[in-house]
Amino acid sequence: MKKIIRLLALVLLIVIFYFGFTTYPKLELISGFSAKSIASGHFLDHRSKELIEKGDNDIKLMDLATNTIDEAGKFATSSVYGLKERKAIYREGLGATLIDDDYDISKPYLLPKRAKSKALPFPYGNIDPKDTVFSNIDYSKLKKAVDDSFDKNGGKAKRTRAVVVLYKDKLIAEQYDTGFNKNSKILGWSMTKSITNSAFGVLAKQGKIDIYKPAPIAEWQNDDRKIITINDLLHMNSGLEWEENYSKICDATIMLFQSGDMAKVQREKPAQFKPNTHWNYSSGTTNLLSGILKSQFKTQQEYLDFWYSAVIDKIGMNSMIVEQDMAGTFVGSSYAWATARDWSKFGLLYLHKGNWKGEQILDESWVKYSATPTNTSKGAYGAQFWLNAGGKFPDVPRDMFYCSGYQGQMVAIIPSLDMVIVRMGLKEEDQGFDFNGFLKGIIGSVKK
Image (cartoon, rainbow, N blue to C red):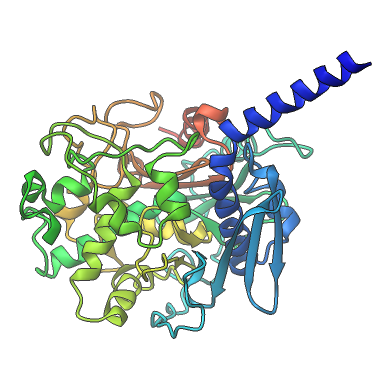
């Protein structure tokens, strides 16, 4: 009996040691991710805690978090076995922000001024459009392609939440998973990077910024980083040190779930390579770009307003909210929420080379610049947009460029077909969702 007790004690010690060595360092990231996800999903899109836990938070280790929602205080808290509790607060017009113990929640804050779109049919407005039938679309093939992207009978093989397809400025397909509809706001994750791109595009069109000049960062002026340009940052080939691996504690997870000033994280990284020699995907770079944008305005209010007045509300993406970090900087890498319809509007802007109903919001040259392969990316990346120039999706036209986000968010822009395809969900290609087959099926509905 004593031997059995000793053996059980030894096993318990091994389990405790293993947990402490492998999981304890991740607890703050787990509770941070969970609190932020619960607060945003609940207060922005009115989802229940249970739906968020079974959907958005259905990620390895996230089931360790215990979550609570304070409706009156408008915040969510999460902890793991009572340890490392984190809080995310919600503010109408700003979305949710993950805060630390030093954050003063009583501090006054500014809200972006918003403008509603004109009463026009979607996609140029928000009124439900009339059905449009194209003679060259095989609607049975189209319906099958869209249907096949969704799970049946509560399965979790594909986990698609929304699909919207625009063809020649008309809505030709739209479908939602149970619990979601045309008004559901869905997090775009890294599709937000393309929104950041558009803000720079407007500033460039206005002649207020030269992306080919060195980045205006004082801390870099006395070392090798002083030659890094905004163009290098937009193309993710600045040469700055950065690790982005969401399966572990890395620069990206520390930034998103532990940092109060996300622009600062990449700004403080040393140079590993000369600019334009090594492409390295970095969410830190995009948040640094958001900080650079912030420095272009005299006041915080002007910075907040610009993102919406220059692009988001300009094209009627009225559902969109871009969330901030504790420093009041838009998390331009990851935190834009919008309906699938509004995400498709953004794709339409780039499909039409920056033109929106006759108004040139972005120069045509900016859209071409965004969709031109970055040096050393092997045709996979442009300027805050992903590309199919290298043939990642073999059955999709090479001219496709797209916004892409964690868990399989996509806004695909296909100029040769005059088409925009939006897919929102919870599974990426390496997790089993066949994006090539999905896109191929929709494209195949267009008769040649």
